[in-house]
Length: 102
Image (cartoon, rainbow, N blue to C red; front, side, top):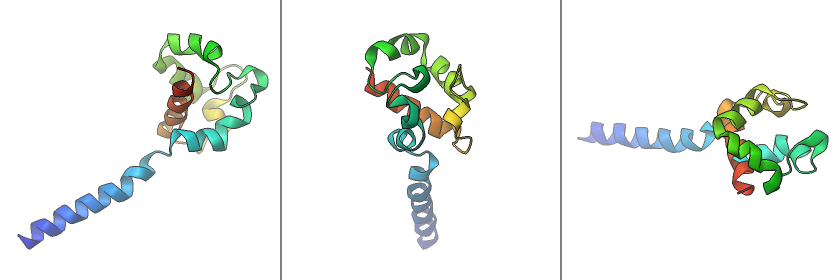
């Protein structure tokens, strides 16, 4: 019985430890990478919270928005120029920006 409790406790601890670090928050990724262009609209980047600029992108579907963000589009480089970001981090940032435009 004690062995089972130890295993369960270890599993829960591992989930709590790993869970939050799996993907950075969308807002923190936005602040560290995306804001450089998306806060001011540099090179035509849709500004954070600009519903009109984001509407056609959102209408195209999230898979399309994720694809452009992960692979780059126009003047925006893949992953916003931060190749060290995981795909999950990039998608979290996209989700954050889209949520601010709805």
